[in-house]
Length: 629
Picture 1: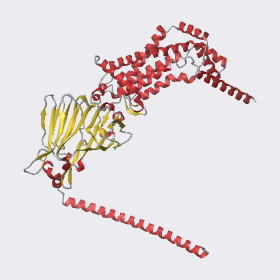
Picture 2 (picture 1 turned 180 degrees about the horizontal axis):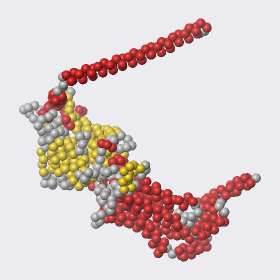
Picture 3 (picture 1 turned 30 degrees about the horizontal axis):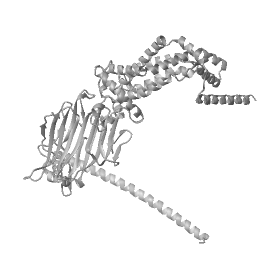
Picture 4 (picture 1 turned 60 degrees about the vertical axis):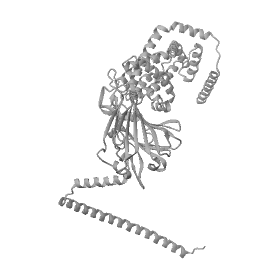
């Protein structure tokens, strides 16, 4: 198609007109919108003013409005309750019934026939009262049932009859709540919530006995809602949040998530046997004996002002077999995070106890098969947990003492070579590369390994991580006092600043100070044993490391810093005794001379290392020659 000059001008004018039209139209629309908003705001202000004047002239009877609203709500509940209209309210509404065993008191409410709170008798909260779990209005265990054609209601909104309590010969108690339905002439217990509380057990059996489940449930599915709020129990809320986790067993495999790293879960890979929350020292579990078929779990971490660690809502589905009567067997656990106690249930509940998780999972066997049995053995005859920690530390140090001896022996050999290393430094004249080559030759001739003292130090790392996990999770330490520490599971804080200092916090831990000072003494002593003391960086290392410890340890449990202090004191004592009374320095020198006379065989690694060093030396010599040219 051919365009002449007039056609181009015409299209251009048309484009300008379109642009101008849309611009003006948009501008007018915005102006009209502003005018409308202004007019609406004036009308709203006038209405508020008129309503205020009317309210002054004709004050509203708020009490009457509340009564009317309550009546409307009551009618709504009755309509929704259908055949369970008698359970929508009444004199028995929201009655509380406490039931106790040796370990806890569980208080049930007839509204929803569910636990209202669980008070643990042997554990104190941060305010010196008994620890209470599931005690807020957020907590709920409920499910929806059909009440009439096209109508349904949650059991959380229905009032069950007062419970029947039956005591068994074994000391257990069975508490049964009935949900009554039907007309005025035929009252039928359609649903029974049955709880079994055993004498010396934190586990509660929870059975839902349902008549005609196919009528009450949609598609034969019991859609259970479990809402749980973990209230703050420890002095440091932030540390408690860091050590709170969501755990579950899905498709036979245990998994967990820290609450701060994600906020929801979807269970669709297989049957879910249980799910629960561990808030450092206390666990809450919901267990389905025949497994949940699917479900979701969501949680939020409320602001610190709420004094709540986490609020979790789970929507879990259970398949109920078609029958005239169904017994849906579940269990509830409210109690301490005690490994041995949880292990006896044999459904992987003990996995929730942090004996080593995530990147520290490699220390779990160390805790389970060494630390925990030794700990239980010592505490059986020692009353103070501070002394138990000291004896556990002594046991561990004795266990690795052969390696420690080799480390100190290697240090003594290195110290014996110090005069010869000084001569090598003078000979090489500051050439670090040549110094390294000559020094390696010296070590080989003397039969000394410069890395001989590293093995015990490296071995201390998994031990420290194991005890870090163990002391953070051991409920034994909760509330245990020792010396100036009121609670070995938390940091000791005899010194309070009143303000928060970056990296350090608002306190200074005295056990942290003892750990830092003893670490400083070990570093200084180790430097005195070093073969090469000319490196300026190495001179500062003994002082830098303890400073890092100060900031790292200050917020850790005092059990851990006390362990580190005891371990350092044992190290100092061993170094002094071994260096002064066990190691014969004259024999070491004689042994070095004897090693020099032996024929040396080089390993392939040594040959490659020396070849690489020689190559680097030649390259450096060539570079020096080029510079001179």
